[in-house]
Amino acid sequence: MYTSFMKAILYNPPVCGAVITGSQAYPLLSGNVLFYEANNGTIVVADLTGLVEAGTEQEACRLPRFYGFHIHEGNACGGTQQDGAFLAAGSHWNPRKCEHPAHAGDLPVLLSNYGKVWSACYTEAFMPWEVLGHTVILHDQPDDYRTQPAGNAGERIGCGTIVPFQ
Ligand SMILES: [Cu+2]
Ligand SMILES: [Zn+2]
Image (cartoon, rainbow, N blue to C red; front, side, top):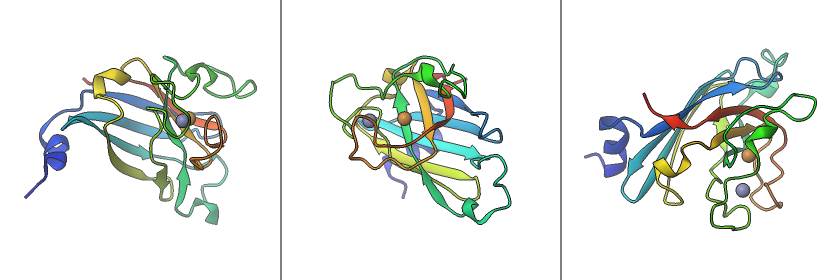
């Protein structure tokens, strides 16, 4: 028997999602982050490939490892590698003015397996439609869930603006 969580992602389309593109340092990164309504909250599914740094495709550091993953408050992914990739995404989305890691946009780290990620979590920090117009950001280091203001998660390496699913 499926729970209501499994039913939510198997039998319903997402409410919204973001198409992820990589920074100059992660040109192979692509895929989607999808937001489904479930119970009193949201299931977030990350479905990504190519999460490997340019030039490291053949190296042992491609072994499974963790990457920071948040919803940021900005509505765009602009920003140069020099000034900071995806600087336009702004800070962690934080509508209730809490401290990290209690920002509504704080999510579990992603596990990349030779560049492949499939990950899902359930959160009651927001409903899917509340994140419309904000951004999904991936970082090159795992969030430590302690350091202020953003978990010391390193560079921004992937970004996408959250838009209605179609
Ligand atoms: Cu972030
Ligand atoms: Zn945060």
